[in-house]
Image: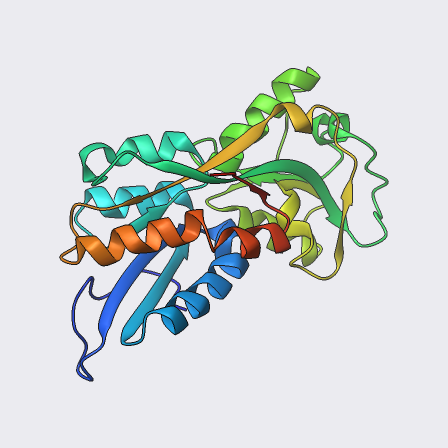
Length: 238
């Protein structure tokens, strides 16, 4: 697994294997690690390189010509950003919802999203251009709350880290994130079920292995659903 910009795409490595570079949202680290291993096992000679970051950052890199074969985003808006770089119409492969996350024991006694509108509560959210930030804004609007975050992060991982490390009293992350980090717990969040992120995936036009790229997309939509379900994502039926 690689975090950051990949050096190559859809090419043969020095040992003769084929490299497939997958750009995937930061919230997908765990299930896509499982999918990576199982896809490689089912496709001998293929080396899947995962590049995880905020979806907005990944979309920008794709537009700028970064080498990637597949893009899995945390919302449809960021997939739309890459436009004609998608080789085929994107397909939704998972869903996710937000929750309030607090340090273990909830020392600031955060009880609802209204607490994130209290200036005395140190809160952190994703930046508006990031999928989790756009969802946070919709959630706050439904609750009639004006958020007053102390910082806005470029990925949901940044929010989770600040809360887990005690730099914030609360934050908004995906429900799937709470389980993957120790030292934090979730707080029941009203209206969260009304703000659902749909995760789309698409092979990219920049890939020189279109069949392999399309095959990975199909794998995520079928066999990969088991890993997504195991990590708490909503899955799709096809």
